[in-house]
Amino acid sequence: MNSGYEQIYESLILKLDKCDFVEVAERLGLLLQPNGSLSVNFLGREYEMSSHGVYPTDGKPVNVNNRSVLAYYLLSKGKGEPAYSYVPIYNLTGVVITSGTNTKWMTDQLGKTFSQDYATFGEAICRLGGVFNGKLKSGGYSWLLEALPKILLQIVYYEEDNEFPCEVQILFDKNASRFLEFECLAFLEGCLVRAIIMTAKTGDTAGWV
Image (cartoon, rainbow, N blue to C red; front, side, top):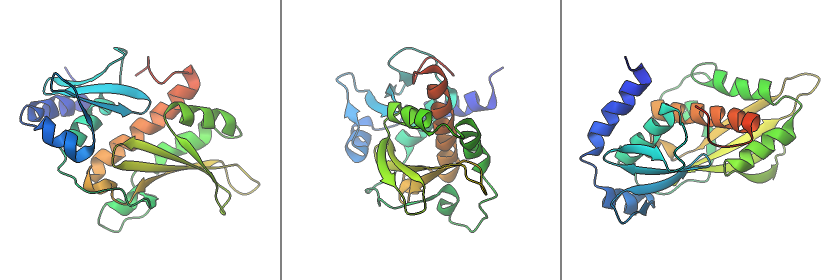
């Protein structure tokens, strides 16, 4: 029996059959292939997307949530450009909630994994397509990453000190919610956390689930 995440992906594939891939390519800035499929780079890997599904072109295993994020992205009706201003994911819900809710447990994994190992963290981010953006006045090291065309992220690494443990923050462009709903942005954040950890562990952006 398929897991709940696999069932989500399968339900999305049924909807892709009605997707206008030419319109999506123009609106999102994706590459339209001669066979009518779309290509996109997501977390250091190339994917081909069509009405038949979402597949990494390297043929290696991939977590089903990566595939679901890309399917949601194709089905989105979002328009516009990034704001180039970044906020925590909970600021994109449209309702007031506390930062203790939602997805902080995911980024906590990054702080624990890369405590006192900023060099390995930086190498993994580079492999995933991140670009170093300097040190912030707050003391954090800032990286920018285009997760998908129109969806930009800022990743900030704070070193451990005498008062606080190592912390990694993932911030979303303010206009990201035009292209993905909150639940799917949370999926994307989880995909990124897993990709950073596994890329650092294996030295590769592919070959693991």
